[in-house]
Image (cartoon, rainbow, N blue to C red; front, side):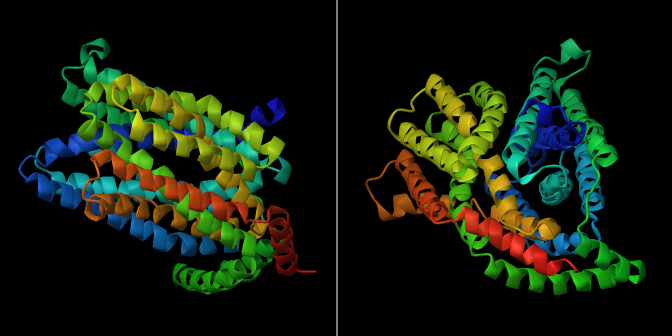
Length: 444
């Protein structure tokens, strides 16, 4: 395991998770919601929330719909790294752009934020797909966990620095919190750019024989418009192949259910702590930092665990912990100390469930079409966190005597259903089916 973690190529790839997680922590989870509240002071709370939700929905839908097509285009010429760089640059520029959004410019703030989300999510499609360029099947779990571990550490470190900048600007020689906030957005862009460079310089994108043939016979004379049309054509072929990969298709169904529960907890935890427990902002930031730093060693551990007992078993263990955490939140969560315990519990399994899901899916798909199939993987992830909030909203309507915290019990259904479907996935047969399709794709 040590040999893998200190391998130059693996480290360079994993550092991209360290790089872009700064956007997820400082911008998405930390400062932009507060920043947007200040920008939209002229709007009513209802209107401000409406336009914020619309921005999130539109950016998610756009990348979810485009993901498989983009993957198909990239796979036709082994251009995953170029696509990653393009989307990462979009996210980097938008992160920096937030620093120049002034008071009252809420629409501009939302536009930049939405484009940043597209850049962040779009680059992840190709980052995930590149795991097969640097890892053997045996080491996929360790490598995937390594990436998530560095992501939690990197995002947590910069977020901690940014929090100190905003809360104690005088320590950094800054005039006021507003200046510190602007510099925090710029720091995310710089951090993202610097730690993306090793992947672009060191990681060599491998191409299968089928990809090389495609590149030689079509891409040399292919315009951008033709590439898009070919991407759609290839997407139809990929969809037919996915239907033949029963294990991969079944996994995606289970993944959609349980990752919906994971995403709902991530997005609703702060709201729950704020509105139901009435915890102060300082406690919420502390809990977020706790989750980040606990998740760092936990993701490494789950990578090792997945290699020892298999990724499917590792995911199921994580889902059991999530289920116990939900019951704890329902029956015993009453104070900041309780919320910190919950944050630690979530941190122990969040990265593990995510990283092992990525490594398991990588085993179940043809190696020459990873960007295409990870396009579907990311599409499922983007359409997650829909069912959970809807079910939670339905509880007070269907059960008149229910309390606010009773609604979180529906998440147990998602974890149980997702775990049940995952149990039905025959990993051994799925790996062989993926290899059979890859064999057909390779010229002989």
